[in-house]
Picture 1 (cartoon, rainbow, N blue to C red):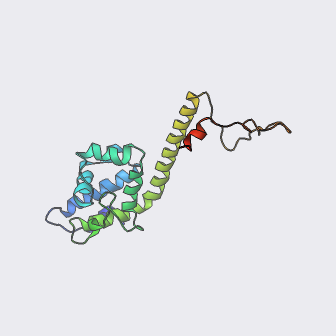
Picture 2: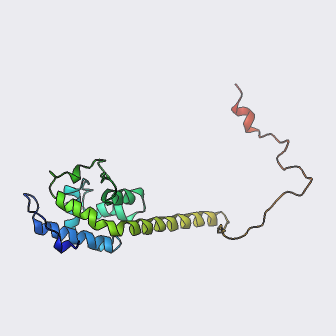
Picture 3: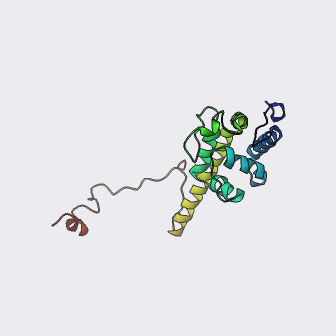
Length: 183
């Protein structure tokens, strides 16, 4: 259901108009692929006040923790809003933020429903981004030691010892080994 068609109720600490504004910001944020420019102050405020997240000092710090770095936190964040999951808070480990007695409970439920079409592709995007970053780190580390990456799909020549010759280490004793097991 489009954000403008959802009927929210006014509450003591949040009006129906504010809820609609936050939901529209939430949808824009997800549609953008979680771009920082779409992480509004209203959205940040709702997350820390009514979705069981701590403040992280300010909006930019919160964004940095969850979206600027490729860490497991981003996936815990997505899990919290995935409608097929129980909605366990990424930070507090409870579902209190979904309680009908919580300010903005109707908005929180709408945010979970609105997130459904985006979360699988966002998870795939961030997982692939993380994979590429890890491969780049591995390639740099191998390069540092004069080695190169050989993709698994490339055929490689098998290197083996000539037939009849004994293995290189046979009969040799590592001088450290006896020291490990003596009194």
